[in-house]
Image (cartoon, rainbow, N blue to C red; front, side):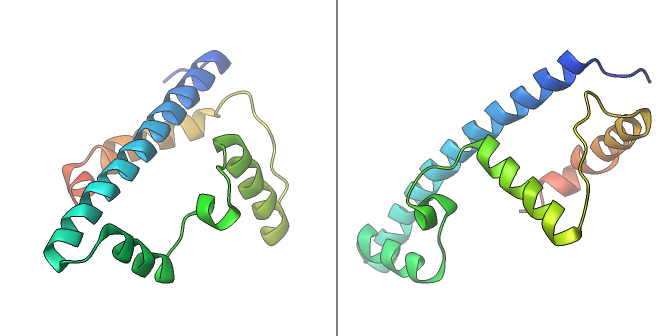
Length: 120
């Protein structure tokens, strides 16, 4: 298996970011639909359900009162890992051969497996 070029890695990450943002939008939409269905079943308004959910859970956006970008969240996570685990994180232009092989193995054995994807 050959090394990935820096551009291919960047393109792949940008693709993942776009898919993640699409996923987030779909999840918000699905949450709204589920909330409406739950409201009908429980004979409660969507506002009452939102209030009950808000008592027990929140989102990062709601907690901060603003949207959080992918880059900002990644930077905060990296800084937290550095601090909490006393790590030195290095910026790399590409994955090592071992990392590329491990990623392929995980994709094949776990993430592409029906048992993994159908567990929810």
